[in-house]
Image (cartoon, rainbow, N blue to C red):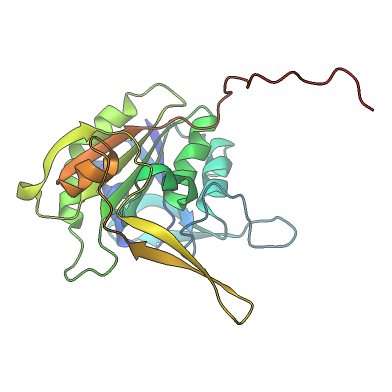
Length: 255
């Protein structure tokens, strides 16, 4: 199994190292390629840093995984996943793992996530993929439980690898001690979660984009509700597919 590990928090993010280490422990051939700086909220965007669409790639060494090839890429995670699937970092991967993101990615808003965007891009290129996040709160009072994420992933990654090519799952892990984490549950995507986007038009001709906590009741059985209850959530996600056509009568001629 050849695996690409990427993220949207950047090449120096601790969650990336956690995920790469867990993949290497499976005995897989691991390559790391991640944005040189944070690229959160970039969805599956293919933005490159340079105007001529050339992308700078710098080789890096991961201190705790010195034998693992690693690259800092001046691009968004969607472009990194696409490039990997076309052989930019060696033979195309059998599996793309994106994360571990600092903060949950739940509900339909995963559309905007760079973590999910990399996995979605891999899936439409017929590659198995998973987006993985740790439910660190907006204002944490203690360090993230990366050890919990690692323990959960050691059990889940072999299952992720058994997916058919082109399949994708979105995984969220509670940010708590492992003994306090509930069993994994299949979960649908919530319409909304506890954290929502906040967009404000200011008087200075600017738009301020951020996040805000909300207290609305969560839909039972969704990733938002199950994650809040302490469960690891696993959500199968479909990427871009044809849909049933609406009942329109399309024009035959043009005026």
